Amino acid sequence: MTILAPASAPPTPEVLSPDTASAGLNFGLSDDQRLIVQTVREFCQAKVAPLSAEYDRSGEYPREQLRGLAELGLMGATVPGAWGGAGLDSVTYALCLEEISAADASVAVIVSVQNGLPEQMLLKYGTDAQRERYLRPLATGEALGAFCLTESNSGSDAASLRMKATREGSHDQPGGWILDGSKSWITSGNQADTYLVMARTGGAGARGVSCFIVERGTPGLGFGKPEEKLGLHAAHTTTVSFDSVRVPEGNMLGQEGQGLNIALSCLDAGRIGIAMQAVGIARAAFEHAARYALSREQFGRPIAENQGVSFKVADMAARIEGARLVALKAAWLKDVGQPYGREASIAKLLASEAAVDVTREAIQVFGGNGYSREYPVERLYRDAKITEIYEGTSEIQRVVISRSVFAEFGG
Image 1 (cartoon, rainbow, N blue to C red):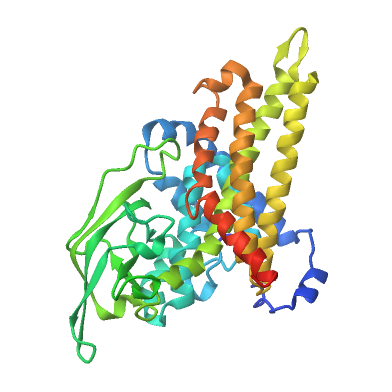
Image 2 (image 1 turned 45 degrees about the vertical axis):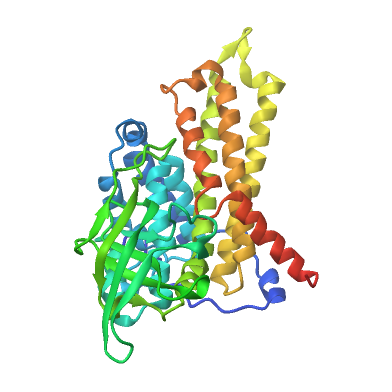
């Protein structure tokens, strides 16, 4: 049951011209949106946040929390109801992701990856048969998905990936494909049920890459142990290996040679998710710092009365507000059918760097206590760093943004 479905299904977004889109910009939320976000906030503060420190220490995968979010409809938040999702607009989903992230960034990244990559890829490029078999259980939360692009020698340079897919049979009489190779740094790599895998079916470069759907339990599919990471300990990240993994012809997503385009086109939506994850992490650190500054006394008064502290808190508030607005603009552009890749990159760049700066300054507000695991800000600092790296490093975002800028000037 999807609890968070709007009272009435949102209309199909009208594709607006840039002038019309700008004129229609509205910073207010509807009653439905406010109710949905409040419901998610209450659930996360009651069921997710209280266990975040324990899961950070133990590395336990947050299955129970994910089941609760699935009952709310958030494991398929923007997937249409016809395929088992909640059918939320991108802005509402982004605000929900902020609430999850403020409670536990590990849970948030699992939700973000599932919604932003495997589901969007299947929704945009899958056949009806593929959507029924794979998208529907992902959207309802019955299954977990993983996005398999990165390799040990292929990160930012995604087109250089080496994993191979060899055709069985011939083009006239296809017999499926055999996948060989490995993928690195895969979120939920050892937990997922459905893997969207990019592999080389042709020559060098982007045009030689295709995308395949691989089911858990397929012979030859294996997993490494969870990486021992700086942060996000409850979000397992592993290698995924493919040793002569046979995939039927019907499990190619899209057309042969289209795989990298499929992956990169859906990374824009994923970057909005990571931006909102960063906003949520930063907001949590900011709230902890503000409360601590009001309660902690030195020299006979709360440290909040010291300009050195109050200015830090002011800067935190400003950075968070700015990052949130840019991310919501990107989500809104997606909803109205406008290009949003540049805005998604700007949002991820600004929000991730804000999260690292805000969490670092929150530790400074706490002083020595901020360096202790008895307080939450050191965990938030560790969790924030990865937002500058995954789904495109800050350097890659600057490449994307600068290319877009120069293109406007005829470059």
